[in-house]
Image (cartoon, rainbow, N blue to C red):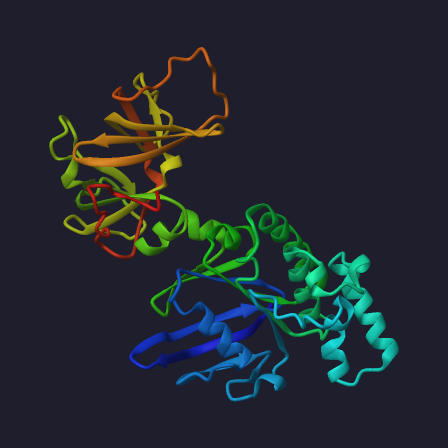
Length: 386
């Protein structure tokens, strides 16, 4: 798959607010690509720039090698699925889907064939002659998708299309969207603030913050190897550790002095994989996901070649069924630990509130972030997103 949709130094300002700030990235043909970020990060503005509903102040947008930056919306081979469906209430499901083909003056037989194909794709054949008021929210969304696809766009733009649906329906529509994408094979550009949606559907994700793309990568890369503290905290939960490199025992690993652990007896630093090639004295902002920790009453066996072990005290426990969430204090820090119940035994001695425990993790599971100082954790808690 080659580069198909390209943003080259695109910026857009609304008054004093720079909604999109010199953004450059490309989307491959047939890719399911998501723009993920909080409200106001610029993701919907980017979608509107592609659709032609807004014009950039600078930069270019290319589609399949053609500069579409100044083209009017009706001359761009892209269609949009909106959050509110935007169906015509007085038209049947069939007529809504057929609308674009009729505007294009397609032959009647072709219209009927194409609409019925779309109805079959979205499993709505039995609702063809129903009005939008007579079908459910999930069915309306399917009709909106079918209407957008029937004209065979090069790119389908989806602007938070599942936001109005309840949780169970949203989960079912995620599977259906993925299946539809696999069947039609066109490029999907999906805008969402929901990390679960983006992680479930996307080939790649662009995580946006304050008008810029903080990281563009596969879901696994974004989660396991976040570039910045914003990405680490926005995608899932994490623990931040801010410190200074005290020694570099070899080319691959370094020892980091964490000031909040200074009072721990015998503590000589946290070992971490030194992919940023930090030298002694270098500042480090380390992210460790809660599920990467092990927790035990008894001293742990050495399970990894590069293993960190700390003493901790349990402050809070939440049992959720498939896993237990622990919050423990280590020195003056509070750390989140998630323990999966892969082999939970009722006759094992449980970890209880106030217990002294051992905390351990593989040094390879601590990831250095590009920004050198951890964000202000607030309220004495260094866990973000928890």
